[in-house]
Length: 500
Ligand code: NAD
Image (cartoon, rainbow, N blue to C red; front, side):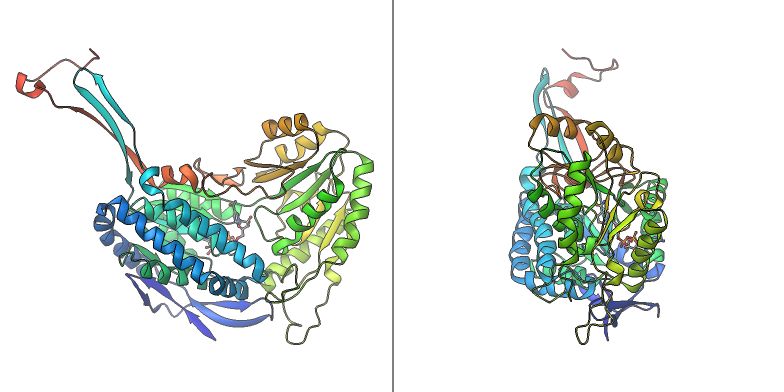
């Protein structure tokens, strides 16, 4: 059994609480390690360390900060497979998908290399006679990131690369289910030349989160996780005067218009619903065919493909999806399938029957792909996020009826439409009440130089992750009005300045 602790002030620090959380290998169902859960005092020490590192780091020239990011990018490419292997053993997603998790985070590090350009302010020359006006983006101070289990590489990199490039110092609180990769990142940052104390990792649970959200030295909190916790973190952090962005859960719909290329739709749905065992906040979990003919055809095409999904352990190169993250989560997803059945959905493919008999892996947290038809908007299994390898089909009769489903759903993270008609696609993209939209693209995750964020119950706060939104989140604007003529020498002015 391995142990994971904290990384503070440029070195690994052993936890002192005596409290640990289990780390499982979801592929085998065995406990592989344990993670130290920090006390309030340990979190406060990490915050103090980050605070002490802030003056020097924020005063480091932006070009030197960019060079650290450049070196980090090279190191992350070198370490990509090692990171992906560690990630896949704790999360359970298949290795190739874990490589993608690292890659999507790495792309934010690549984006942040351009920080000298991104931090350029505005300058207006001679706004009034002899007066210039300029603005600059200043770092906030100590900022914190609290992350979910499902993207243990990408999401910590979304937050930390932009925050640190902007000149902030960082306290990272990863998911206790898969804490290894963020600790590996700490070593990568150090090797890239980041001064000690700028990037710190504190492992923990609610006690750590509460300390981060209430400590006055933390100026901003970035959170990604489930909606109830996102709401709680947003309310607590903002009540304590902090800037906060808190991304929550999702229920992502894909509209299938009668003119769509149904082979393309089937491929897209299989990957987007069942990839990573559905444990993606941008997974498609609801298919919305428009018209009976499309719906019948989709069920006919999807059924054999869902039945034939290759479920296997996370390092099996032939596996298309791995196990779920924990036994508790497996039980929760199975419970939602039970519920969907009792609520009257048609169970076209029942993943609960799946058994993985490979020797040594019999106790892993496996579930087969599940396909549910004739799901209705009032069902609780539709209203709530399942976060597993389940796809629900809601049949509709018209574009307007289909458009209302994602628009009226509590969540509004991502959605997509498959059609050959540009006008329909444009209408949908413009009107749907969801933050990220794909047109003939099933998982519309914006690239690093755009920004990521849902609407409604999928995000609290109004600034997205990464891209220019990320730069805005981690900086505050200072605007200087400057005059260098004889004004002061000519004597004081008692009338409010006006333009002349
Ligand atoms: P989670 O909410 O259980 O945990 C997220 C973080 O909150 C973890 O660091 C955890 O330690 C902490 N936490 C858990 N319970 C807490 C409590 N009671 N008080 C304070 N902190 C607490 O989420 P998860 O299960 O790790 O991740 C899956 C969820 O994240 C899904 O709902 C998924 O949709 C969502 N997600 C959203 C996005 C997005 O960008 N919208 C991206 C990825 C995941």
